[in-house]
Image 1 (tube, rainbow, N blue to C red):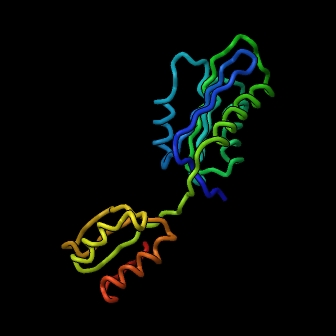
Image 2 (cartoon, rainbow, N blue to C red):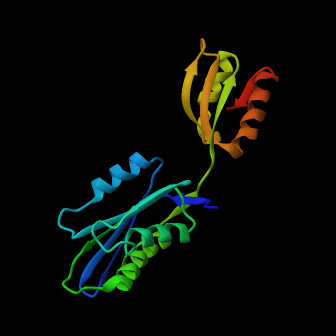
Image 3 (cartoon, rainbow, N blue to C red):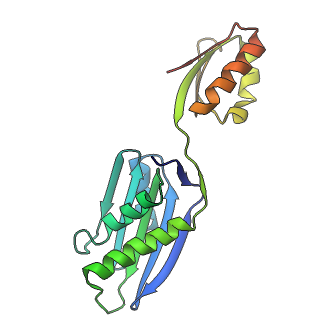
Length: 193
């Protein structure tokens, strides 16, 4: 099961029999973000823009005019082979005048993507959960100042400032519950939804 994603965008370029292959990769959280990023990275001067992304169980890939199965699938296999998730990779090709054949294309696209991902900085991929926190307004105000400590983001503040809805890594929930119990003398409530 993938446990990492990219910590920062990455790129790798190589030439294969006079064709230029440029791979760019980034971390993405949604399919719409992946397709928008791919469109923004595409260079009109390139012959082909082949890509793949994986976000949990969701994935897509495109050969962009190359023979079926020679570009998009090898890029997806590079993502999976590196054990990555929430990642999009675009490999652009500028044709150099020499045909590579199906096997050559698979090696060029898959190899360029794999090398880009191999050298990319990584960070752990945390399963995010939503938690509803109920406490007195003063305790919730202190919690807002400590969200970074729990790697949490505020989703919603409601009900007369006595409830916060947070997104945080699942492994941070016990620490948040302990902190809340200490701050509220056991009166605060934290429930994962």
